[in-house]
Length: 268
Image 1 (cartoon, rainbow, N blue to C red):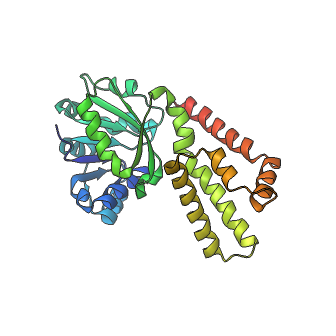
Image 2 (cartoon, helix red, strand yellow):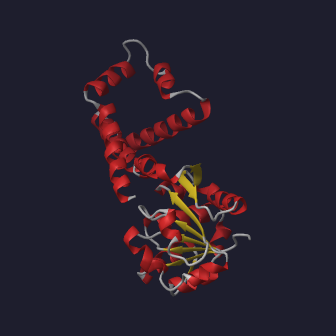
Image 3 (cartoon, rainbow, N blue to C red):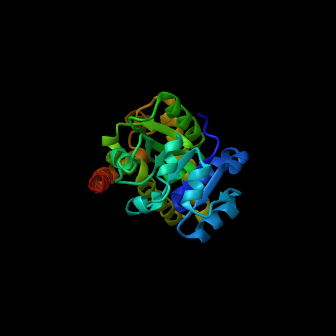
């Protein structure tokens, strides 16, 4: 089957990021997407901003969609799919973003085999730079898996992972943007303290982070190699790195990821 129509149950932050990312990559995608939400005004707001369609109910959305993206809170999964279970028997694909709801759990909601895929994305999908952990259930054949990966490609990097590693992926890929935003904010504040206008501090910080990430991704340099390349003996970088080590920056980041992983593991 081909994936011609996409339905999103939920229109919150991450659902909106997916929609805006797809429409940003190809404006024609708006004509293939329908959204529904328990709060109709939220779905309408997303539709007004992106040009996608709105379904009056989850049942209507599932009926008209080849692929259903489930973007609701874990505790709302059962309610979101209630009343539309039978429609999935027509070869529809269920892609879940719900943390803590495993593929096996989702499969038990249906009295027949359904192709279930689980994703753990982050909000950078909105600008085509997302990190998307991907796991496919046993009912997903290779053709469907390839089609879904192709559909996700404009949103960022798709990283296939065993589902048992999703908690670790959540701690880095999912929570990481929040951690990085804190670090970015600190860089901007430091720049202002050093005398830069806020706008210049922001532009320099964003550019530096983007360039560093791109260089690491494309050059083959390890973080240690890059650090050594930009650290001159007794220079400014050496002085700053020494202070970061004294302040425990490395261990603080490791600890933050660890507690995020533990929380994600508790959720499933």
